[in-house]
Structure formats: structure tokens, C-alpha cells
Length: 638
Image 1 (cartoon, rainbow, N blue to C red):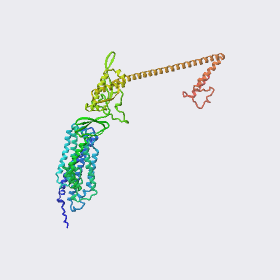
Image 2 (tube, one colour; image 1 turned 120 degrees about the vertical axis):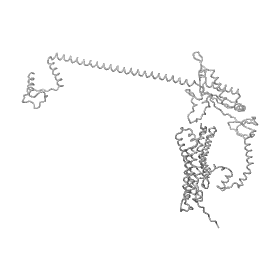
Image 3 (cartoon, one colour; image 1 turned 180 degrees about the horizontal axis):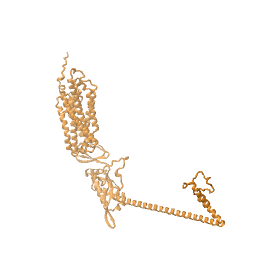
Image 4 (spheres, rainbow, N blue to C red; image 1 turned 90 degrees about the horizontal axis):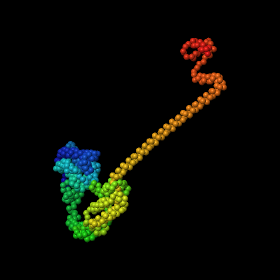
């Protein structure tokens, strides 16, 4: 016979009885976390759109500090809001009157379903979006901020406040807030992100090559927590709704729980595996056997690893000097070799046939010449510019003797010489290069520079410019090789290439100035000649027009005079033949011509007054009757 189930009233449970106080505390914490989240996101947005205004914010943005802090704050705020929602549901469940709290539709049961699932899923997605928007960028940890201690001290302020929040919530009894363990794990995320980036900043400030892997690990951890929360909330949709006293916030995270003190201890891990997965590793024979055989297996692995130190692999472009008890005994060829393990045997690697190209005297700001990273399909590198119109980075100037007007002087010459050298292929040269020198590049540069100075000091500029490059290369190569052999370096000069040999770049500028002046003078001469030809052409055209006009006028005058002369001769002959009749005829002819151009009215004097015309078209100077006698008298007089 089964015992009856004793129902515990909800008022006796601290989670329901103290729900109002828990809500008030969670609300304050949520407001503070929201302000921190808005501040972090606002600073990230401002730094992204105003990059370069504040170097500290730019460094935080590129290091992923703002992104990690924003993502951690979003996760912790999500946990706080989920607990606040459950506390509100418990408070409403307790205040509901006349409702059976054992039914499945109590407020605490309802909010434990899809409302908290939507809330936690939205918070996880927001955290993922923030982490994706401002991730740590590569090549940002090579150098720290100049005032990194001050910056780290400022970052400790929000970290301290967040730690106070976490400690305050951790002191809360699980009876009052059943989700306190899960919430405390999420509240540790923002301080963890800040302290991790403070450590990264301090390491970069001290010059430690931390790179971006540390910041990337923090971001990956936050990604894992957000993804786990998002996946866990999906299970809420498929699980049955719990009873009110069993309703809890679905904010549990296995990754976040690793931040709890003692979470990585073997006993704690065994307890979690037993409670979560039902696996008790303390009763496993495999674990017991592994614990018993751990010591001999570990010792065997150590001996095997130590024995592997006697296996040497030498590449095709290397040789190895085998030292037995500190003394070199053999020169090993490429391949695998079984030797005495360390420290009884040791192999020092040395190059085999590798050719180095060294520009003599080429330095940039006291450093080495940058490597040539050009490709076959890309643009040509700057070192391919062999014109002498500018001083290139791999050009070196030397003083050279000259003679002008029986007076001794000096000039400068720019030269670009590359030495191709390698370690000798015989064993003695390899040993000399390995044990007899420290920096072969500096040695070759020094000896080649000394030989170049001696070469140009004993020649004049015409001799150097007139000599063939092959002869110069041969002489310099022999001199440098003799110096290397004298020093017993074991290095071999394969070739010495004279890339360019020319006067200094200032001569090119002066020569170009002379060319420019010559071009300007030639252009001005051509312009003046063109202007003179234009003026001469205009004057010739005007003179030709004036002469043509004068000739035409003279021809017209001559023709007119000829016409008048022939007319006069004709009139003289006519007068001689006709006499007065010719004069009368000429008179009437002239009169006919004159009258043809005048408006006249001729009135016959034989017309009587009674027969006067009906219309008088004469001008109104006087009356018609008074004018007729005057006309008659005029006619009679004529």
C-alpha cells in the first residue's frame, strides 16, 4: 500500500514567499547590466564610425574587447531577465486567489514555457550578433598601448562592479532562487572577458608575443556559451510544462559552469558525469587499470620520447654536423639518421647549396632591405627600376677622383651591386661557416663594401663609366673571395652582379633642367619665327591689294579719258558736217534727257477758259482763274 503524497503549500517555499524581494534585486541588477551593455555597444559603434579619433577605443575594438564584453553582458543580462521572469511567475502564482496551484496553467508554469524560451533565444542571438560584429582582428597584439597601465586600471572599474554583482547573487540561498548556480555562472562571464583582455593588454605592453589567439579563445568560449543556450531553449518547446514548484529558468550552460571554483577537479567532474549522464567512472575497471598502469606507461613514454631525440631528419637543402659528447665527428648528408640521444649526441644544421642575394650597402632607415614579394603576374617591384633619375633604396654613393682644368677634385657615383654567395659545398667549408662565424650577412656586406671603396678610390669617373660591367664584376668578385678565404669563413662568392653604375641622381635633375631650357628656347624661337612669317604675309597681302586697286583705278581713268576723247572727236566731226543743226539736235537730246528725270506738266496756251479742265492738278499756290492769264502771257512771250 503506497503512502499518500504530502502536498507542500507554496507559501512555505522561500522561492515563492520571497519572490517579490528577489524580483526587486534582479530588477536592479538587470538595469545595471543593461546600462553597461548599452555603454559597450555604444562605444563600439562610435569607435567603428569614428576610427582614429581615440587610439584606446580603436585598440579595444580591434582586439575584440568591446565585442567580447558586449557578448558577455548580453548573456548575463539574458540570464538575469529569465530569472526575473520566473520570479514574477512565482509571485503571480502565489497571489492568485481561488486558483488551484497544482494545475498546469499556473503563471509560474506558463512563463517557464515559450515566454522564457523566446527570451533566452533572443538574448543568445543578440550575443552572437555582437560577437560577430566586433571580433578580434589579426595582427593587433604586436605592440601594446603606450599608457596600458592606466587603461588597465580604468578597465578594472567595471570589472569590480560586475564582480560585486556576481558575489551578491552568489550569496543568495538556492532556496530563495533555485537558478542561482546557473545565474552565477553567467554573471562571471563579463568579469572573465575584462580580466582576460587586461592580461592580454599587459602581455602586449611587456612585449610578449601573445598574438590574437588569446582574444580568439575568449571569443570562442563566449560563442560556445551562446550557442549552448540557444540549443537548450529549443528543448523547452518539446518538453511538458513543469509544476509550479519545479519550474526553473532554462539558463544552464555546461561551458559557463566550468568557471565555478573547483569545477575542473576530478571529483567534481566525476560527480557531474554521474548526475548528468549516469556514468560512475569510480567503479569502472578501465579507469582503475589506467590508474594502476599510469606510472609505468608514463615512464615508458618518457624513455621513448628521450630516445626519439636521437633521430635526426635533415632536409635536402641542409647538412648536419654530428657532435658526440660535444665534439664534431661527422658531417651528415640529407636523410634520416639514428644517433645518440640528447645530451650525448647533437646535430647542428647548416645550409647546403642555398644561395643568398645580398645588396651591398643597401639599407632603409638602418634596417635590412625588405624582401621582394612581387609575383610573375603582378606589377614589377621598385627594385626593378634601374633608371638613374632617382636615388633608389639599394643604391650606394661612393666618392671617386676626378680632374678638371689641371685641378684635382672629386665626384660621386651611385652603384647598385648584388653579391650572390653560399656556404662551400665541402665539409671543411661547412664546419668553418658553422663554428667560425656568427653573422655571414654582415661579414659579406662589410668585406664587399670595403673592396668597393678601394676600387672606386683608385679610379676616376671616366674610367669607371667606360669600363665594362663584366670586368668590374670579375675584379670585385676575386677581391671579395680572397678576403673571405683569408678570414677562413667557408663562404663562396657565386657571382657579383653590377645592377647599375651611374652618376648620382642629382645629375639627372640638372641634365633634365638643361634639356627643359633647351626645349623652351627652341619653342620660343619657333614661335617668333612663326609670328614674323605671319606679319610678313599680312604685309605682302596688303601691298598686293593696294597695287591691284591702284592699277584698276588707273585703268578705269584711262578708259574714261579715252571714251571722252572719242566722244569729243565725234562731236567735232559732227559739228563740222552739220553745223547749227548738230547743236540744236544736241540741245534737244540733252533736254530730252533732262526732262526724262523731271516731273513736268505742259499746258497748251490755245485752250480757252471755258474749256478749262474739270480737275486742276496744279499745286494750291493760287486760284485757278488767276493763274490762267499768267500762263497765257507766258505762252505768248515764248
